[in-house]
Length: 135
Image 1 (cartoon, one colour):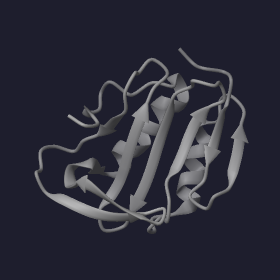
Image 2 (cartoon, rainbow, N blue to C red; image 1 turned 30 degrees about the vertical axis):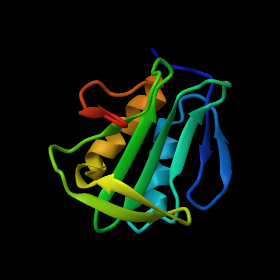
Image 3 (tube, rainbow, N blue to C red; image 1 turned 120 degrees about the horizontal axis):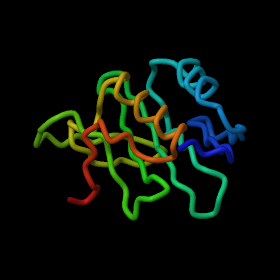
Image 4 (cartoon, one colour; image 1 turned 90 degrees about the horizontal axis):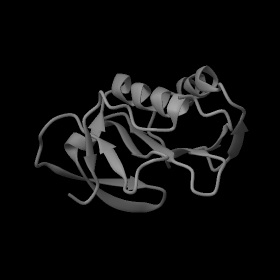
């Protein structure tokens, strides 16, 4: 089911932009425009409603794409996983250092699949390997 209320995008640059419904191509082009460089902060795409779902996208050249999502019907947050790994890495993001599992950084292809599905349904793409945060 397509959600037609549009989304708000919080850019890695600190800018906030609003998009109307059916904005998938526009937002995917925006991700391309931001480029394959180290982002200083995440991009957050969120529905306009008070308790709307959201998807968080962050990129580092040497690691890949971090994708975290809480769809409209989710009670907790999930991240896309790219297999098994016990390796922990420290990442500097938005002025803070955070710890992540190496498997939490995925390919560009997987990240764009997750974003496209979220923009279409405001839910997580069930074909991807989502892991609950904190488990």
